Amino acid sequence: MLNGDVRTASHSALTCRVCSEIMADGEVRTLHEGPDISVVIPVYNEEDNLAPLHRRLTSVLQALGRRYEVIYVDDGSEDRSLDRLRAFTDCDSHVRVVELARNFGQHAAILAGFSLARGEVIVTLDADLQNPPEDIPKLLAALESGYEVAGGWRTNRRDPTLRKLASRVVNWMTRLATGTPIHDHGCMLRAYRREIVQEILRCEERAAFIPALANLLARRSAEVPVSHGERVFGRSKYSPLDLLRLCFDLLTGFSLLPIQLVSLCGVVVALGGVTFGAFLLVRRLLVGPEAEGLFILFALLFVCLGILILAVGIVGEYVGRIYLEVRRRPAYRIRAVYSGGSDP
Ligand code: UDP
Ligand code: MG
Image (cartoon, rainbow, N blue to C red):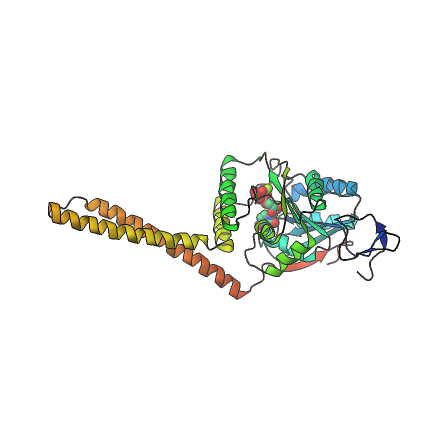
């Protein structure tokens, strides 16, 4: 706040609330040092997408007429993404490039970008251009109207059918786990007020699922319909197994519901077993001994065994999460940060 450039601006939700002062003549004087908007983009093997992305993003941000920065986080790419990103810093002073030590995953990369973002509003965007940067103003307008978080909602999603189905399951589970009525938790075209991002960083969770966490923290969050395109270059980094892992992460990271459901199942199965036992006893007294029904017993045994294994798995998932948390290993490691001139 102290050494920032001093300029006057009309009052707006995008100017820093902490650093804005209403002067005697009624003007709002902004003493904020950082930019108004930070755009954080995780990048993992996206070399062919980066040039069109940067071109389109820059023209959107310049048209807004606000101070901005773009933070690209290279998440251990094995292609030439990092070289391409570093080339941006030579000719564009708005760009900073964070190089992570290895591939830590999309959400860890976004957290690394958050830790360096200085904007009053922080926007996240994928590097593959599936979400067009041209939709960013819609999200900013939602924040201007008082929301703390604005998330994109891909109403016309252009992904393979199987992928869309998997996302539906993930979204349904997230709604169940967090209790927030959001349709699209997976869309990473989102905008957050700075306070929310700071709270997310304070959470220090190993497997943070950023959109769900932000919606839990925000007083008001909006869902804004955005367009969606097919990936032109490269391919999705999420396999079906990754999505399954994400589901488990979401359920155990945000709620105790699974374990409560399993306990409930245990009670129902136990009661069922007692009732069935009583029924068999009565039958034996009335009809006499009989060997039929043995396979039904086997079937019941397998059902119980399945529930038991599931219960042990879910308990294991929670224990695993606790283990990850107590180890307190960092979610990512920043190797270097490049900005104008490309010197780390
Ligand atoms: N990404 C990343 N690290 C990873 C996987 C993905 O930084 O380990 C980035 C990727 O480069 C892209 C974004 O996260 O910018 C979304 O990835 P992707 O398009 O593969 O996900 P999908 O659209 O299939 O959900
Ligand atoms: Mg994508």
